[in-house]
Length: 171
Image (cartoon, rainbow, N blue to C red; front, side):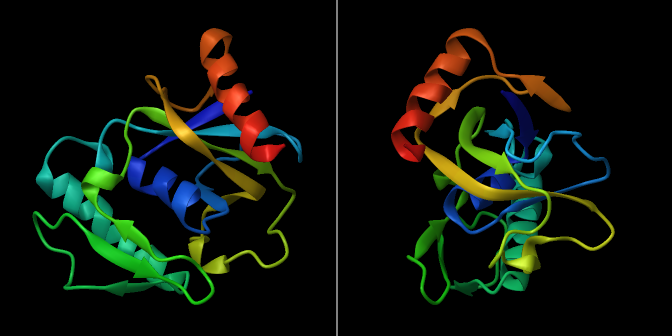
């Protein structure tokens, strides 16, 4: 299995919301049906600091709105920590910096040829290469590890930990 490291707010959207597409400037080259581990990088917003965290969270909230999620609470501002995000027919989800895991594999997705039936297209950013998934499984316990740029192999003990949880949640 290979993995991709995303900024933590986007890996959270895969594991907690209905994000089924990764937006990139390049294609992964993986065949449909291949499993891809989704790793949360070290810093929300891609770098250290409150400003980066708030920019990352604001981008997530903005994209979630395009995907028809409703955000309750005040406008995201410096130092905000929690809010509730809702979508009709879905369970309410708390959003916030402390709730978002970092430096861990949080989910595994199955690569699809294109958007699966019923996929929320609001997550797809125009002008990007879209990596579609037809299924995403959230791991019950994030597997702590350091990520890498590009696609990277999940091997050894790390693969064993991911696969053991995947077997439980995917059947």
